[in-house]
Length: 424
Ligand SMILES: Cc1cc2nc3c(=O)[nH]c(=O)nc-3n(C[C@H](O)[C@H](O)[C@H](O)COP(=O)(O)OP(=O)(O)OC[C@H]3O[C@@H](n4cnc5c(N)ncnc54)[C@H](O)[C@@H]3O)c2cc1C
Image 1 (tube, protein in one colour):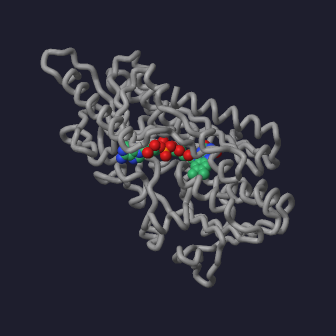
Image 2 (cartoon, helix red, strand yellow):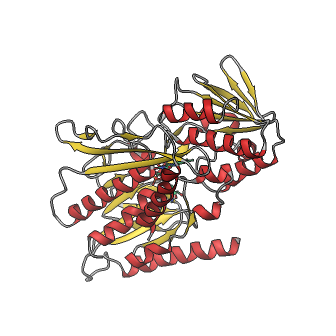
Image 3 (cartoon, protein in one colour):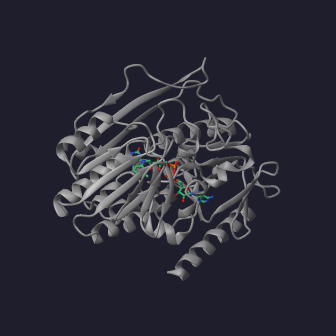
């Protein structure tokens, strides 16, 4: 396993070296522009593919990703609920090869904006004409200091980046004796994907109903109310999962005791058998450099026509790392649609064309309340030239108040379509 990882990394870095030697900066060769993309999640993979596609392959694209495989956060709550396996939501990056996207498996560690270079772990560096960052989120461990160590996180998983932690949380639920208590803590907004914690509470309640009928879910929410699809979730908890889910708003976490699995609140200690703390979040580290996290030192402000950072020219930021416009979700389809707008803008900027002055984004998000039934939340967002931000198109918000098997099937098709648009 370790050898394969090293070989892949070495191959990645070797290909960067070869690309640099043969690349656009070599004397005498025709100068092709280069875009470097950091992070092959929903935003980054889509941006890389669309820049190649929209430029007819004339722009060189290098995509840097630290992970070996793509694991989807959307649908990952169903792995925790037990109706999907991690393999069902794990995809390869290989589909990007046909677009001529060059992939490097490495960590981007720093940026030199004057020289327009990204430094990678291991010492290699990549020159760029335009740099696109879609690193997702990092956790603000300073606000939950007891969970900073990997040992503590193994006891109290977040499962807020899909992968090993998703499996770890599922295993803990399986090992929990019937009659146990699952405690889920939700941080104050903004966090990645507003409805997803409430969907998770439903998934665990659904599992308990089927397999551990004496067990209970306690939702400790630092917010004063349910942050998305309130009617859907509160109906599910009071009717379908009556007596099984207890929702406690205004439950801000002060600390955690990982040894005793206790969540410490201002006026209360809540002891769990399985404790799942979703920590507060900010933009992924690479996007917080160079003053780019210029919204409350957490997220990155961008020009919504190009997704260029308002702090650093030639560097674009996408997805969960940005400071969103009002009602613009930190969500997978949103990252994918932002990436398409950004890719078109980058192609225009690198070829001296005009940038689209009125981009529109359509978002859709599905929440499952058990293994089969889901509800849909959708909206359309348009650039407002006077306000210089994205606004919701009046009448475009659709919220289903009941979950149906029809939307459950639609959710699966939605996820497959989104994975395909980003990765193949
Ligand atoms: C439990 C859960 C359920 C969700 N469900 C939904 C849903 O149903 N619908 C929906 O629309 N959204 C959902 N989301 C939200 C969605 O997953 C995110 O909004 C989306 O992943 C954001 O895309 P991104 O490109 O910004 O970041 P990510 O998809 O997280 O991608 C970031 C990538 O960058 C890589 N990376 C970061 N830094 C570096 C670096 N320095 N060097 C190299 N690589 C780096 C990471 O490894 C990662 O692969 C859910 C989220 C969670 C946690």
